Image (cartoon, rainbow, N blue to C red; front, side, top):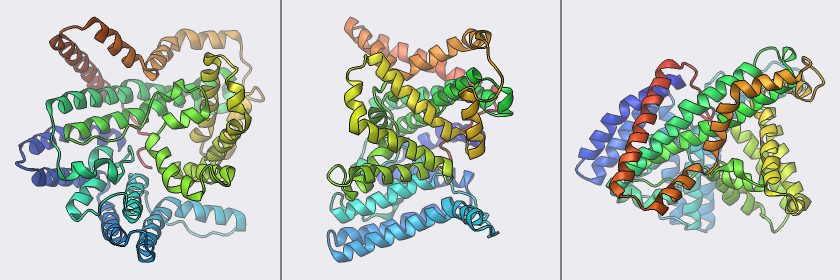
Length: 467
């Protein structure tokens, strides 16, 4: 499904861009994007496109009324209606079976599951729609009077299924008035191809290695192989998700939209606190502005607020107890950093601070990878030498010889290498035509490699695709 969706996206993009470019005015351009977005979503989810439109209609009405009666009791009622309906739909589709399974386990009963599939991207577009209603109630944004413009905001295909989470205020003006410049086209193509390369050339291979060493019979593995598999998954999830975000931001530029950044080289963070300011930034800002601060933020019950936010963050990523544990794990680490660790880290060399942050994050992804709790425990036992096969120095040497070049590529692409190269080139002040031509050749070569990778590799998952 995901492999064919990526191929479908690449096939239907040219005709969408062509129709968009020849559309005579902004109203027709918006209609082109709406039709293309609904068609793209319906191709993957032919039934649940109705749910997407219904969710848009809920917040178009509730947000409009909440904005009309902003900061009043009546406005709060409309905002509450939006929250109940949207979060109710999300709870039913995403957490219904999780709740039933938990009740069955605790009470030893056999309540049947709902049997419904999870609509693609429901977590993303639900957050977008309720953020509009809350911001309209607060008077932070103007009420959108055109349902078509609001539907475009919710359904826009570049970022619909896997983010970044675009708030209404981010593109409020551009929904009604925007222009696509040659600079937008140039930078949009560069960004899209860069994201595609992250996904196809790095994330897919890292994911195949993770599957090799983390799936199957863990007792037949030794600790170094499991740690290496977890390292590969850590690279996979970053290049997969940041790659999709880059593609979405690049496509947005082609259509005149400026979506918010979602990643800022998180693996160079010097603390876990800094990591979560750099990773999935649109999700972090959503929970900060709509959950953490309303609960009291840093002013009161700070540790309680952190615990609540991270339990919700864990559940947002998946309807399973391992995601709750993942969230609690980071809540504990963040509280420890706020209490004493951040101060202690200041006395440590920068390289060790980065290594500390990376290890804590990588170890946390163990809870992310193994959905089954018993398998999670088995993996931890093997990783720390309490199970599995005994390992020798030759095991580590073999991993280094076989995969060091790929790991080096991952590290180079995860740090601000591009910024360094651009800075060095700008110092030499080459002719603009030369840098443009060089970028075109580089992008063309990357695109050819990506096409070859898509055709030759059937392993092509998007980790965040069904959130």
